[in-house]
Amino acid sequence: MGGFRGEAVASILSALHTQLLPDPMAVAQAGEPLRPSMSRLTSRVSLGGFGAVLLKVHRMRSGGERALSVVRKSRAHQEFRAARFLNAAGVPVAEPLAYAERRARGVLVESFFVATFLEGVRPVHDVLLVQPADKRRSLVGRLAELIRTMHDAGFDHQDLHSGNILVGPGPGDVCPIYVTDLHRSALGGRVSDGARLRAIARWLHSLQHHISGEEWIHTLDCYQSQAAACPLPMARVVASVRALERRRRASRGKRCFKESTVYTLDVGAGHGARRRDLPLTRLESVLLAHDRERHPGRAGLAKENRKGVVTRHGDIIVKERRAASALGRVRDRLLPTRHAAGYVNAHMLGVLGVGTAKPLAWLHRDGRVFSLYEDLSKLPRLDHLTRQLFAATDRRRQVALRDACADWLGSLHAGGVYHGDLKAVNVLVEEGPRVVGFRLIDTDHCHFASYPQPVERRRCVKNLAQLAASIPVSVTRTERLRFFRRYARLAPSTMQDVRSVAPAVAAIMADRILVVDEPIE
Image (cartoon, rainbow, N blue to C red; front, side):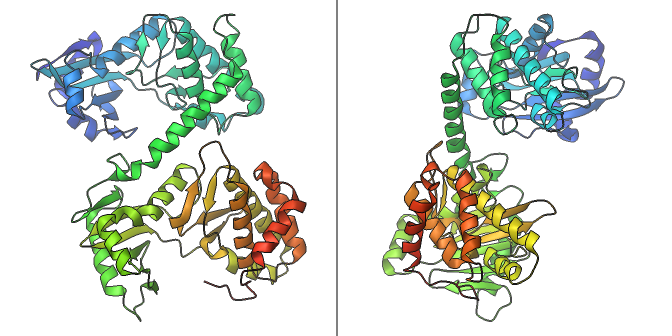
């Protein structure tokens, strides 16, 4: 029907013909969407007389894909075949119910895959967070053995990460486990040692923030315990995980200027990029409001100087860049993206898990450059909050802020993140009931060291001096020394010698204006 051809189990044939065909995409769009993707639409769909199913409709994104589809099986066919293969090998998967594809003169137009919907399951990384320590260890071991079983059966998933293995309710030693998202897999042949190494590295990389070093080693031990063949040297696994992280950062760091599930290049007039959750109509209305509010005396004007103007509009701020000289105006004409650094850096900080103002849009229009960010003005600045707390007698909040800030800065530098203007005015504080968080703003001068390198010593010293000079002098030398000793626990190894670093910080501070009471902007 509708030009589709495929295969299905007998029990779903009637529902397929009457409820899915001839337009499975429309049915998927009307269902409950699951994972967003540019290449496919995945939904939970209720079929009358049959129940809930997983419907995955694949899209052809480019001419190259269409050309290759002449000689390739569709992703839906591959997933259906892979699911039946794993079923036969004793690996738990959602029961495959059907697949179908529609072609025109041999070129694939559309394909879909249907499977039973797994109720009450969650990705591995979510389940690990709520398991007791002994059950976590059991679950980690079971997952490693499952991966080894797939490899020994001749199945290479090729996209093995914690989101593609789902876990049902129950303790880690008995809870059900299911393998999903099989459309990229290779099956039926021997899985090479290189493919095994890549799979385990990808798996550990996806869990790097969810399992401990001991659980990492336990994963390798359990994977290799079933046979003496295919040793996985720890050094090679670590190198592969680091390479994956470098590629992830490079890839995701560029997505803010590409069409994706989060960003789009459609900004109306001019060129640039925006988040999809910022409607184009809202973007236009905010820019019109910016033109009204950018004059002195207007309520929405937040800041104005020779380099630009900043206005506030509810939950959005607009930064318009200005060229400070005739040469700058020429450079803006030739290289309009040179002012996109703050937008790109804010996106990259989000990729690395560092708090910042969410970048909403960047565009170049009629010779003007605009950046739109989430407005965080409701959060207190670090210098204001520090002055307030150290003028009061709440010792618990003083210590919590000091220690949290030291830990944050140490982990920032150890993670290779450097902010070229790390004054306390550019750090906003989120005080929670148990934790204190921080948001970096004014991200134009951020730099990122090549993973896994930390920030170099010279820049660490400069950041410490910038922060120290911008903190009111009401914070005593004793408190500052306690801050630095705490910072050194997580900071790069070159910063852990207090006696050698302190004079270097003091030398830079000697040439700076120190904040006495009211912070210097």
